[in-house]
Image (cartoon, rainbow, N blue to C red; front, side, top):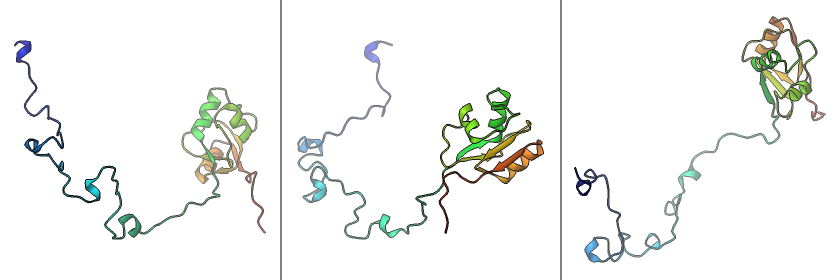
Length: 160
């Protein structure tokens, strides 16, 4: 084999279509765009236009609702709290509040409060006070001999 005998496999390199380069090219004169009209011109973008028919995105029903003032909680799993206790970043003997969780670096910011979920194992006897908790998280902490109390959110709107 010599350098001058090297070549691509058949069909590996495809020639670029050169539009508007005379009648011999097969795509001369109008360049495959047909005769006149909006689509034969340059700079045309008619996405979603269906020739006056009601577009598909308008015919489909709209569903759902995003509550503009919904509460956003910082979520913490019990397994992570246990991991931080084992690492010595949280003291399990003293009461664990939301401020303690933020100071330890487990939670970045409080948002509308901190909610504890039951993912992971907890072995330490905890005294947790947070804004929210799942039922299974409360059960898991009490099973380990601790207590998990849920306090009302700090910035709660007054109801009449």
